[in-house]
Image (cartoon, rainbow, N blue to C red; front, side, top):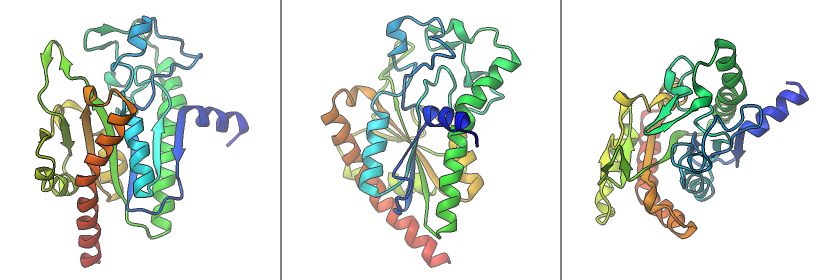
Length: 261
């Protein structure tokens, strides 16, 4: 890798605690609302650049807290999902959407194949490469790994309020989601639901399939309603609440893996 390639990758992806040996790998695909100069602001108003359409508010803070507490590596995109959504494959339109809910994205209209490829190379591939490198290093070291991706969602979507507060999402592999949902009664004040407010039918499980299922790793996607993450104190409190579901689920899966070895 050349120095320029290395610098571009460093700007596109954040890898925290890569040597962490706990039984989890934390991903945060929508951690940032940064718009790199090479792509501009996509014609978005300042408010839209800071809105939930551009990133998942609070998600990185939760992911970083989990990384620290669980001694787990964290890989996070440092580019707005409106430039490229790292939880989407290059061939789908939603990887570089022309509209997000009610927000038009002029800079994503009529992209040429070369322009799309430029974003794939600048944003998506560095993220995927970083995840793959962490997974390989952990496999080489014989470490148990459960993939956990962290997201947040808006409390009102297309004018409709959402009652769910914590979503536990999965694709074909339900093991980690099942184990977490078994402990949902430990958060009686929270509305915790399976595959809400999104599910596999919405195309949101790309990372779970690519980085989790394809590598034989148990996996889960966690969605938190972002009105519960408006302050650093709320972010920390929610991360600790999530840990009441994650810790026993990880322990159960690691024990099961050992029993089946």
